[in-house]
Every structure is written in structure tokens, then in C-alpha cells.
Length: 232
Image (cartoon, rainbow, N blue to C red):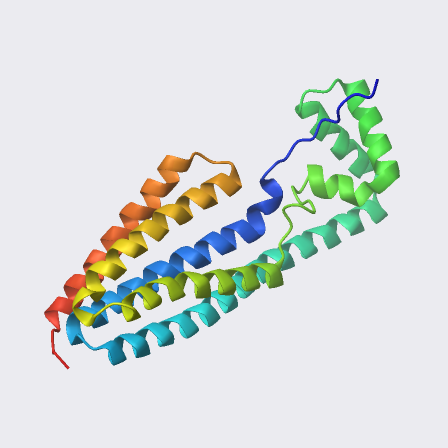
């Protein structure tokens, strides 16, 4: 009788793109909605709202992409430098590196004999991979991917920013502020829930956290717009 396969679905492999995507969408919604609320409260003009919203969307998406690329590239450079150093150490003193790997496994709970056997077998198969994973904490699942992070961040920012912009444009100017405010909060709550579910985290705390800070930021932007009420 064939035994059913046991498959485990972990979330750690999603951390790179998931963090960038959630951050981008959240920033897109929040920054664009806040900008629109400030302009809508101050000018009461659909044209001004459109200009501000589109400008914020384009500038924000490019900024997020550039920022993510530079940030994750820096992380990638550090990882490459550490791997190069480890590769040199393995070439210069393989026995010392083997003892170091053995001690890592001993500290994790293996007996000295078993730790030595594990270290020897992993070194024989892929010495650099073993040290990267167990000494440096670098693996294929968590390694930095600058292009992936930049694209995910820019795309998610664009999608997020488009939502409050569309909400402001499809309703009369007098209803733009409450429409953008309420719809943005609902989308932020949904985004927090989706991000938590994709990452395997509790749903309610994530939704409440992102909604609370979103409401606070948009309230401040609305208050600033009220101070500069110019009625274009």
C-alpha cells in the first residue's frame, strides 16, 4: 500500500518578495491617499487631485523600486563578501573549518561523535554550502534578490496607489475625502490580512496594526489640507 506523501509548506522562502510587496502596496495606498486627502481638502479640484495622485504614483513607484534595489543590493554584496571569505578560509585551512562546523553542531545538541560525522559528510558534499547555511545563516530561500525586490515593490506600490486615486476620481469632489478615507482603510485592513496569511502570521493583529497607523497618517494629511483651504 502506498503511503501518502508528507508535504510541508513553509513561509520563509517568501520573505524576500513578500516583505517588498506588502511594504510597496501599503506605502502606495497610504502615501497616495494622504496626498489626495491633503490636496482634496485644500483645493476641492478634480484636476488638482488627478495631478497630485498621478505624480505621487509615478514618483513613489520609482522611488520604491530604487530604494529596494539599493537596499537589497547592499545586503547581497555583504552576503557575497562573506561567502568569498569563507571560500578562502576553506581553501587555506580545511581542517580548522571542519572543526568549526563540528562545534556548531555540538552547540546545537549533537554529541561530539555525531557532530563530527555530520560535519564530515556535509563538507564532502558541499563544504561552502554547509558553512553558508550553518555558520553564516545564508541559504537559497533567504538570500537577497535585488531585482525581484525592486520589481515587487514598484508593482505593488503602483497597484496600491491606483486604488485611492481611482476612488477620488469616480465620485463628486465633495465626496472625495470620505470616499478615499474609508476605502483606503478597508483596503489597508485587507492588505494586512492577506500579508499575514501569506506569511503564516496571526491575521487580526496585522489588520489592526496597519489600519490604525493608516488612519492616523491620513487624519494628519486631512488636517494639513484644511489649514491651506484655497478653493481653486
